[in-house]
Length: 394
Image 1: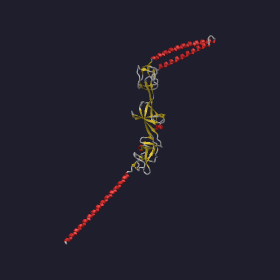
Image 2: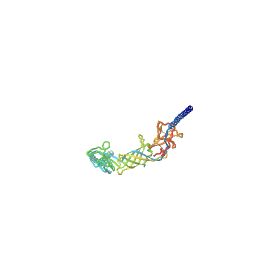
Image 3: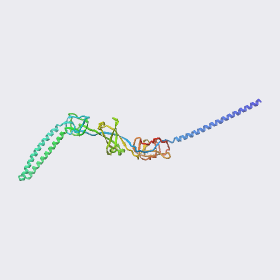
Image 4: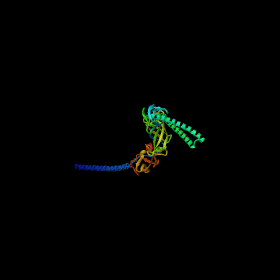
């Protein structure tokens, strides 16, 4: 009885061992199958992610029409309203000067006096020559009158009378010539006094007492330089693309480095109406009231023009443009979310934005910051639009 019980016990134990072994095998098979299935699913997911990530995501903007004006900033050169070098009109030595740099003078005010010994002697000689010519003319005139009287009585020939009349006329012409020479030398004598030709300020004095003065500009050195600074001229070279907008009456703000917190308003008074063939710029003249003399001639000015906008003008951000061998292009996204390159014609450059004259429309989706390698037909994903239109000109 005990042996039979022992055998049954061994059989039960064997069955349990086989059951647990089978259960373990099934679990192992299940785990192996699950691992393989997980790897397959992960591989498929990775393939899908790789395929999705291969399509780049781009941000797009649309060109907009803006009538906003722009602030055109250009360098300007400040000049006095009137400026002139003062030369001597007669030769001599500087006797005395009365004004130095910075002196404000009025028109006709005496600036300096010259000593002109040579001109003085020439004047004395000319006056003596005039007296001689006058004496000869008086004698010739009386002789002519007598001969004309004798001609009436036929006491002399007509030929002799005509000769006396011609000599009298010649002597009179000699008097006129000598008188003109005297007047010329008197004018040179008056130039011994150097006077101011207009109201202004002395900006330079290039002579001193005792200096030899030569008459004229070619051979002499300027004695003084004068400038009228109650009003100033500002000259600006406007680029060709903005030349049509520069018209008389347009105002501009001037900024100077020495007065950074102050702005001056100047008005455009005229333009050259012709472009410089070398620089392709238009010269524009503005005028600034400088009654307080705060601004100095020769200063550098930063000129700010406020130009009006054009409602028909298309604008795009500058970072949408591609520089290619074929010219300027932009990358647009079509209805199938594929890239299409379009050539454009650029107008004015506003810095952050540029003007587009042709090549795109307002409904085109233009890619922002396109890579240089971008080509036609590449599929892309368009990112959701930003809250603020990126193409809006500011």
